[in-house]
Image (tube, rainbow, N blue to C red; front, top):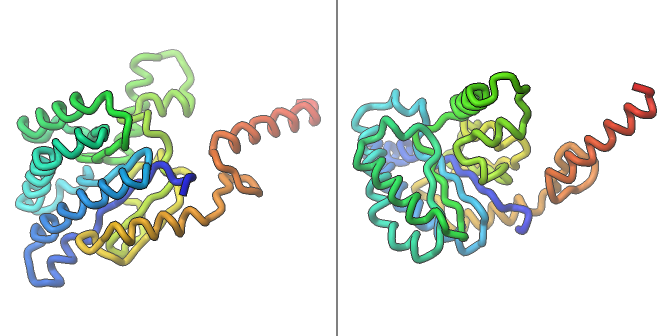
Length: 253
C-alpha cells in the first residue's frame, strides 16, 4: 500500500442512484455528500498523502439550475460541518478550480479553511470544484508565458503553474458509478496513474470498498514505461534520460 500516496476520485452515480429509487437527482447528491466524510476519514487513517475529489466540473454548469445550486450548497455545508474535524485531524484543505464564480459566502469559507489549514502536515484534502483538466493546462501555459515571454516551456515549468503543484502526480484514480472515462479530470497529473472503475454508485461507496481497491491496486506492478518494477516515476525518468544520453554518445550524435 506504500506506493499509493495520491488517490483521486470521480464521485459518480449520484443522480442515477436517486432515479433508481424514484427520487429527484438532488436527493442522490445529498446522500452522496454524507459518504465524503467517511472516505476522507479513511484516507486519513490509511496515511495517504493526498485525496483529490472531483466535486464539480466546468461542464457541470449545463446541468439543471436546481442541481447546480444544490452542489454549491453541499460544498458550503461540508465546510461548515467538517471544519472542526479537519482542524483536529491536521488535514490541509484546498480547492482547485476557478472559484471566482461561486457565491461570495462560499468563497470566503473556502479561503478561511485554506488559511486555517495552510500549516497542516497531515492529509492533503483537495476538492476539485468548477475544475477542468484542459482549462487548468491552458491557464498554466498562459501564466508561464506572461511571466516568461522569451523562455521555452518545460514540463517542470508547466507543473509549477498548476492549481496545486505541490500535490504531484496521481497514483490511483477511482471512478464510481460504472462509467469508464476520466472526464477531463487531472489529465496532466494522471499521466501514469492506475485506473480503477467500480459499478458501485457513489452513495453506496463504503470505506471497506475503498480500502479493498487500494489493496488490489497496490499489488499491480507499476513500471512507468520501464520493463521492471519502479517505485518512483522520477527514478524511471532519470534512467530514461541517462539511456538517451548514452545512445546519443554511442551513435556520435
